[in-house]
Image (cartoon, rainbow, N blue to C red; front, side, top):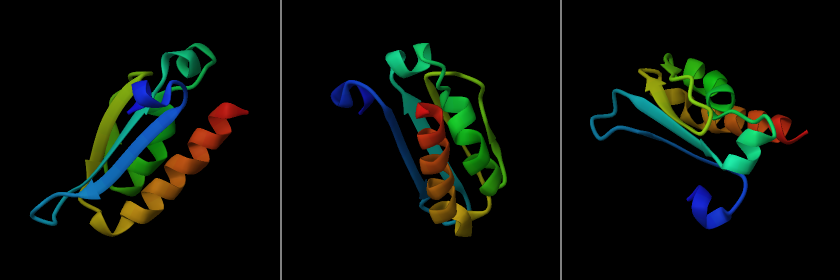
Length: 87
């Protein structure tokens, strides 16, 4: 997705098929990483909201946890963190 965008941040979140785990993934284009953005930093607040954590990679991370009711708020947190990384 990031390759298709060319530059920026792509994220997705959802609930697993059994409804017991929520997940989030974030990818950041290389130029944004070079400018200081980090997928790990963008995803961390959202993963915590889901009751889990993510890896510490700058370009791509995935994480999540058992708090499935937090998926919408997790995406709101990702949007805010991605916007902050652009400033």
